[in-house]
Length: 239
Image 1 (cartoon, rainbow, N blue to C red):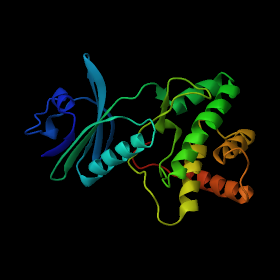
Image 2: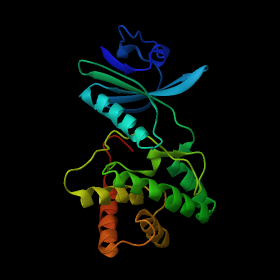
Image 3: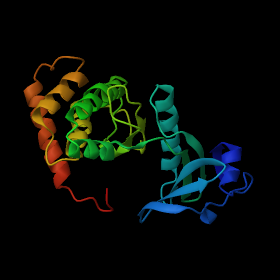
């Protein structure tokens, strides 16, 4: 079995760097699909680890590793990659746990407390510029939802940690379509029945660098239409 990454963290998971065997990994299952299982491994004397075990297309683990490294190089806060190992059709990607809680949870709590200012500051001053910076690099997320961002608190200066980046890529065509999908993912996953119209416009303005872009009404309609389709879609294996 081949691997890349930290020897010490590999041993922490009970694997021998010379002959790692992913089938013996133990932890709490936090998500499971027919070809993928995600475990959380907790050790009292070491940071928590998340292990994404795939039993199909092992190249995806190495691709996600490279995406994590690339995004970190570009200055994004992502789940730090610990190690990746693969053999045959099985692969394991280990990442360190990130601080905070899912942004979707923080937003839902703020909305229940009627703390709309903190929601606006977080969305428009922390998240919108981050998405704009990603797109400025010629990259799109494809799966961009609030629960993929972690933060310790809401606010304009909140530090955002990004998880589940495995589908990030640089499209060679259809750029507008992918940008619309990213922004629609955030609109669709907002933890309320609807994204407040005023906040949506402020978010779009912030994303565009301070003023609404030319043709923004058509752009906004495309985002809204895609968001409706995302909300109507029933995930096969849960969120």
